[in-house]
Image (cartoon, rainbow over all chains, first blue to last red; front, top):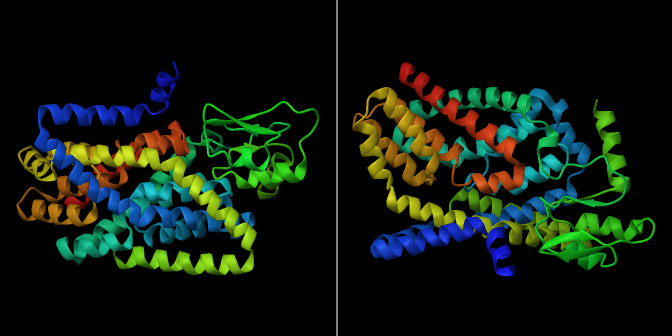
Length: 250
Length: 160
């Protein structure tokens, strides 16, 4: 039963592993080539991911919420889009490297539209890519593609924001009294259980709340909330503060 | 390591040093959070990378180019865009490849469609994106990126 559960939680990894085993049985040479290809991407990933994680955590620590709301929030308008385009363009690495950064920015008040702009700029028009493009396809080709792509990004980020609302993203502040954990967002790092073991415990690699009589200790609870790398914990005053911000922004 | 990656490393190192100087405890907490993020995402990222390695072997970019070149312009473009979504090729392979495509006479339109979906739309990274941003966001973003990639390609075909 337990083995089954672990398999379910890592279904994707298990499927990839199965595909490799099958490939090695049918065509061992292709299996070896696949591993060799993967090695290159692992190197590419290791060159950028650690620094992105650290940078995201540092920005989360030092850039105040109101600053993010001002430059990347719903009210930032054209300034927000320009800022997002620049942010995405001076990046490096594959697009998934932008995921943790964008999740953090959205948590701190960046709008859906600007998140889409950052992700898209990161994917197709970052400066290192443009330089490469000039080399192989010429300046004219690059310039035209850049203009069209920026126009497209501005258009479809607007459409995305029309369809997708803040509440559709995981780990949004819930209108709820008392502490709560967004199980979908929880990555099972157990930092909350370490900082406030009376309230949090780990069950099936996810944090869960223990029954405690009365309200949680605000100091310890605040620490636990701050320690969560994916901001999956919310409740009490956090929620109230958020509602005020939303009110003020309107 | 290219200049940009290096710049991000140096910038972050300076940032980290300043942060450590200003508040040692909070910086340590931030590093812990970074480690937690890494632990949470690394498993998925590694699975995806191994899948990309496999897809590239079974479906090498050169083969894709050949296939796309043999189609009519309209189908070639849609096929190129679709194939671009399942693979994820680094820029230094993608641009020379697209360069070859254009010079070999495949046409600007399929080449640009391929180039744009290659990096912006990801079937392979879909599970990871979904976990971070939710199903709706991921589905809408990828679908719109795909549609606009084809649009960009056709407009470029008209201009050039």
